[in-house]
Image (cartoon, rainbow, N blue to C red; front, side, top):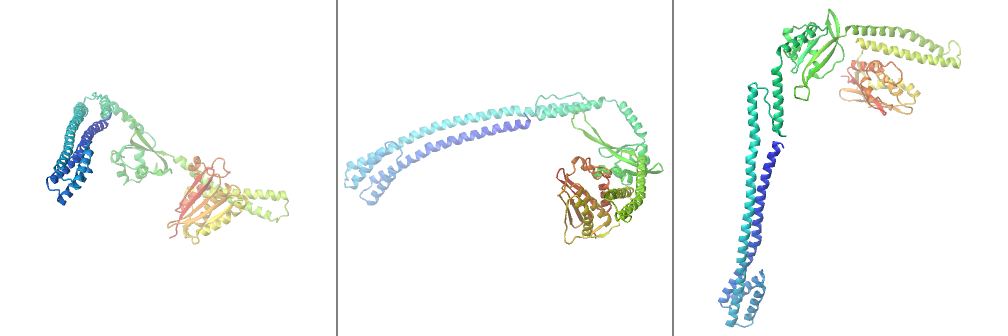
Amino acid sequence: MKIKAKLYSGVGILFLLVLLLAAVGMYNLYQLKNNAIGTVSDNYNSLRYCRNILGALDENLNDSLVFADLQMNYEKQRNNITESGEAELTQKLGQGINRWKNGDHSALLMDELRQTTYAIMDLNMSVIHREENLAIVMANRATIWIAISGTLSLIVAFTLLLNLPGSVANPVRELTSSIRDIAARNYSRRLHFDRQDEFGDLANAFNVMAEKLQEYEHSNLAEILTEKKRIETLINNMHDPVIGLDEQNHIVFINHEALMVSGLKESEVLGKPAQDIALQNDLLRLLIADLFENKNNEKPLRIYADNKESYFNKEVFEITIKPTGENDQKLIGHVILLKNVTPFKELDIAKTNFIATVSHELKTPISSLMLSLKLMEKERGGTLSADQKFLLASMKEDSERLLKITGELLNLSQAETGNIRISMSACDPSEVLSRSMDAVQQIAQKHQVKLECFFPNEAKMMNADMEKTSWVLINLLNNAIRYSPAGAAVTVHLTHDENYVKFTIGDQGKGIHPDHASKIFKRYYQVPGSEPGTGIGLAICREFIEAQGGEIWFDSEYGIGSTFCFTLPIFR
């Protein structure tokens, strides 16, 4: 049992016994009051009435006032009959008073009245004596019960006095002695409290502490230093920059590669807070931003190193240990590792440039091909058969798809190289919405999808690139139409607040499974089972919107539909 429970139990029992003692005393006093005082009060009243009657008999009853007083006391006595035989005597007294009232004024009647009155008084006096004896008996009984309750309370209190202080003081005394032994470097000392209470928990904690101290005492400092030197050598010979921080974010190690790319000196940083050094070093401030701002920057860091612009991927690792005798992991620091991805980045840049070049070069022949198809469609070269018209329509559709793909690839290459050409100006969001709805009207009719548009009468002007914004809206509408079943509706809501204009596109398609939700805006990613495409449309949408200072996101419930939203700032 816990110490707290023991204290509550002991004091609670003592409190209950005191309460019982008070209850026994109050109960017996109440019995004395009801059984003795109430009855004695009635008998005393009868004696008082009889004494008044005797006083009237000793005076002249011919006096009307005296006789009236006699009758009044008789009536009171008649209404105060409480004892056996008292009613007959009172009735006899009343008959004698009536005889006097009817003219019998003999001395014999007077003697009879006095004798009857004395008899009533004797009867009540005997009852008073009897109640007095009963009260004495009850008082003795109450004394016995109060003595028993008091003795029981005294025994319990004495038992608590003997046991409770010892149950607290003895473990404290033993703990004090053990602490003195530990202070004297006797780390083998252990506490053995065979009890399931706070002192048992304290003994376990003390033993864990002593075990840790003993472990540290017996550890070989030379071995620790050797291992430390080996790890430092390994870290310093790594070709990737590495920085180690303790739990207070003080720099505990930094290898040569990290010193070279940061331009710092080892003597300037070791043992010092990283946040203080970051005030004068931009690279270090960027590296520790994740630790203080809870950010996770996935983009490669661009650092000038090896006499050229290099790219590094940053990884931050938590260092945790499980202390001896404990079950929970404890954070003791972080390691920041920079992986040099410059060769891969150069390949990516080359790929982007290649895509941009190919896309740009393909647009011209594809445009010429579409112009030729358009001329053939107008039958400038002669009448076409039904099969030729079908082939011509198929070629036109494929050419439009190729032109769209090359346009998307060209836009993506501009986004990847940071060469997006944004022309910001005051735009009417209603006009952007109207142009986009007109552009997708034909494909909506083809898929038998209804377009529903909701916008305020007076929409605020937004600061945006109309062409890029229209491209984003058309792309989102095309996706919503393609993934909506026939007969469904695609809704577009235009709203605004004090800072942003918001476009919301909702569909009734199959939605996006939660497993794919985090990858929707990634380049070249396509949800398995979706319609074939390049997988770059949504990536370009995000690049275009973010380049204009806006934000794009989506909400989806699998099996019900998706809602894509983006915002653009209000024109000031």
